[in-house]
Length: 299
Image 1 (cartoon, helix red, strand yellow):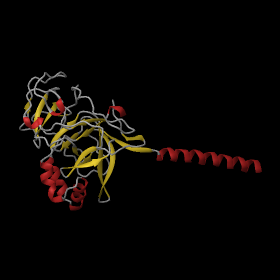
Image 2 (cartoon, rainbow, N blue to C red):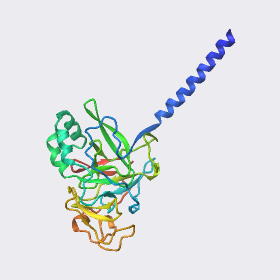
Image 3 (cartoon, rainbow, N blue to C red):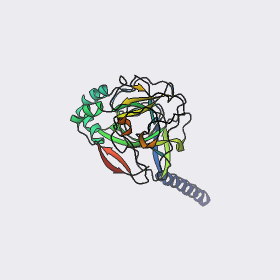
Image 4 (cartoon, one colour):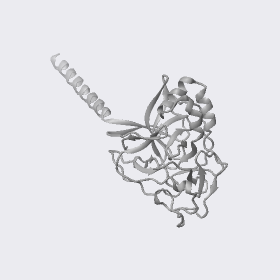
């Protein structure tokens, strides 16, 4: 009898030891949710306001990433870099006006949404009207916000390439169009990452990027056409009607031409694009809140 009791106690101790180890390992990890392009995450702010996006073809690679720090290597790219984002000429990937209508129907929801970006409900319609619809063409790290219990709840996430977003005038993603969720740059991940959610073919943790704000507000963005691989210019806040092609930039090798943002060379760019040049560096990210810089740790 004593032997049986002793064996049972030993088995219980072993079980508790392994449960404790698993709990300890779980505490040492930080969750980052994988969000496929068209998937609706739990607790979205609104129904989808994303438009149809063609399947991504092989697009030119963006410029080399800037130096960055942190335990998880996430390459940093400035929002002013030509071709960092994509879209379709003369077509919008997102309906910002409808998003404003949906949010403003619910005062609690609109206040929670606006507060994540340092705005008020009264600012929402004008702010959203000034954002630019694009698609991310690389898997992109962000801080997403879901609407739970009347509050905006932040969550670290990776947006799949092909996800429709709205950019601010510094080239920073501010809205995920499939859910209406407000976005901020990713927070620093200081522990091992545990990826949750639904993965997709081709996902690699070391292949994700984060977007750094341009040094100055931009008047236009140089986008990659996801259907052809060419380049076109879209004015900030434009929805496609005023897009124009950049001559001679189809394919992966752009000819030498006018120096664009951050010193990258693309022919035929207007001064409004060149005004968004960025600065490389190793220090903390400068992200934007309500249109003004704030300090945030690198991821």
